[in-house]
Amino acid sequence: MEYTTLGSTGLKVSKLCFGTWGIGGAGWDDNSEEVRLAAIREALESGINFFDTAPAYNGGAAEKLIGKALKESGKRKDCVIVTKCGSDFVDGQYVHDGSGRHIRAQIDRSLQNLQTDYIDVYLLHWPDEEVPVEDTFGALKEIRDAGKVRFIGVCNHSPEELAAAEKICPVDVVQEHFSMLVQDRIPTLSYAAEKGMGTMAYGVLGGGMLTGRYRTLETYDEMDSRGSFYTFFQEPGFSKAMKLLTRLDRIAAECGTSLPELTLRWTMEKDFVTTVLFGAQKAERVRANVKAMSLRLSPEKLAAIDRAIAQEFAAEA
Ligand SMILES: NC(=O)c1ccc[n+]([C@@H]2O[C@H](COP(=O)([O-])OP(=O)(O)OC[C@H]3O[C@@H](n4cnc5c(N)ncnc54)[C@H](OP(=O)(O)O)[C@@H]3O)[C@@H](O)[C@H]2O)c1
Image 1 (cartoon, protein in one colour):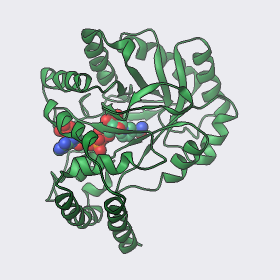
Image 2 (tube, protein in one colour; image 1 turned 90 degrees about the vertical axis):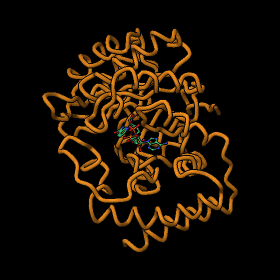
Image 3 (cartoon, helix red, strand yellow; image 1 turned 45 degrees about the vertical axis):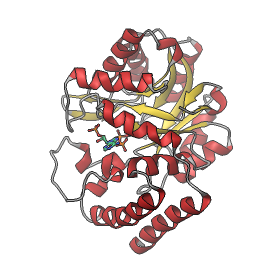
Image 4 (spheres, protein in one colour; image 1 turned 180 degrees about the horizontal axis):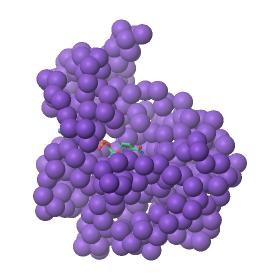
């Protein structure tokens, strides 16, 4: 495993961060708890010390699973836990409430779910336009000052929203959607990296699309985020993804590697990315992804991937 410093937090984290949206039971490819716990154990054994979760991931179920696995491993203090606030999952619906009142209640539930007395990094999951930024970030500052969390961050923010938050509370970490298929959050990641914040790229495997495991268009349940959140699981995005995969298949073959390894390593090489998230429910997938740590891509191959992506984006414009 390779480690890095998570920007201004100074925390030492693995370059791969284990994501828990799917493993919490988000409604796609559900596996038994034993299978899911084995994936987390494999992550720990391979040196991953960085875990990302949220109360919105199946109403706290993902937090509870991580809490259970870390307790059982005795490695809580060696790990860096990220959880989030301002969003929840209630009666089968994702709901947003970024009010200070809601966040103050959420933090205590997250601490309980995670079986810990502190959260390393606490992120506002989505901006909430209904709530004054002073209310949200005032509460986050208060929670940090009380020692319940060590560092504050945001997800899914524009640079302008991030700058407004920084006026009220120090922001040390940013988590944004970034992959070969989704690039519109680069301005936030670049802004954060330039200011010395730690950056986390999510959805890097395109919800599985960029692993090459999907080659035909399927329809998904309403609650299965492959059909909604990751828009390339529907047309016209699916055809665009397939064209890019054809180019990536060729590059991966030239490099003698797999698509997940190629994708993860390419992302890690971006200078505005500190760590790369992946979601996986099975130990074998964790093993496959960790292999990206030993892959080296030459500047020519990295440029070839950038060109392949640019050609697909240009074709869309
Ligand atoms: N802040 C936010 O708003 C936000 C939004 C979305 C995600 N996130 C975070 O980012 C994490 C990563 O995103 P994600 O989980 O949605 O998507 P992802 O990491 O892009 O893709 C996850 C999918 O890829 C599959 N997969 C992983 N490794 C594979 C391999 N080697 N071969 C084949 N398939 C493989 C997984 O399969 P299995 O599940 O079947 O193992 C899963 O279906 C989340 O878990 C969450 O922690 C944050």
